[in-house]
Length: 247
Ligand code: URA
Image (cartoon, rainbow, N blue to C red; front, side, top):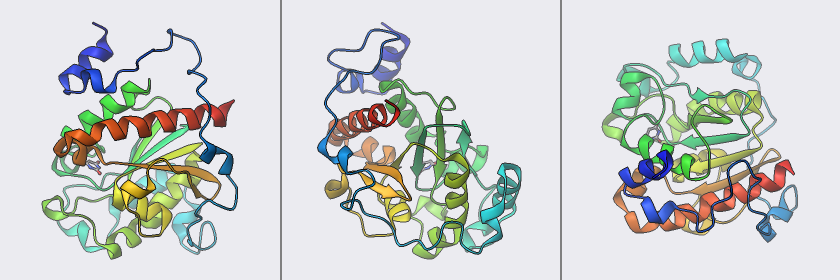
């Protein structure tokens, strides 16, 4: 059994996440036809969030990576700073094509200062592995809010709004080719509109010219095993979309 298969089995994902016809090692991704939605990148159908001018007026908009991470670590823009052990800026390859955006740090992330290192993070790593991605390699992982909401509650709109300039700057610095929003708070933060995951899945949204795909949050999938198959479809959609973007 390959290392990846072992990992997937350990996560209880074995057959569910497995490609029926895995591409041979080193070959290009399966040339599945691109979804019609891909043709809409940059087109009128795409939802463009009303986020105002890129960069806005905030000094955050001019920060480089070290300045941005320092600002996040020192941030006191909302009440979440009061109970955090530390802020969790993000992790990964700063030249990444892929950006995955979650909701906010949980207890383990708060402790360790890295996003998605708890149970949901293990599942996220397995999801990445299933489409031949790896944390830190062509992948950046960030959250909609950088500080842990108490009791892991969903961040309030004022908290995501206060934290938005940080994610906005991360995206501006990264310039990823594709963004995957994990769960509703991430999707709503990026798209600045009400999102229902069930309705948003399988569609391409647009964030300032960058395609955005919406799928379930790994923590939700840990509680709702039957939706893993849908998340798998979403990952395949994301992979096909990326293949179309880099070809
Ligand atoms: N859930 C998230 O949304 N982000 C994390 O970093 C961890 C769990």
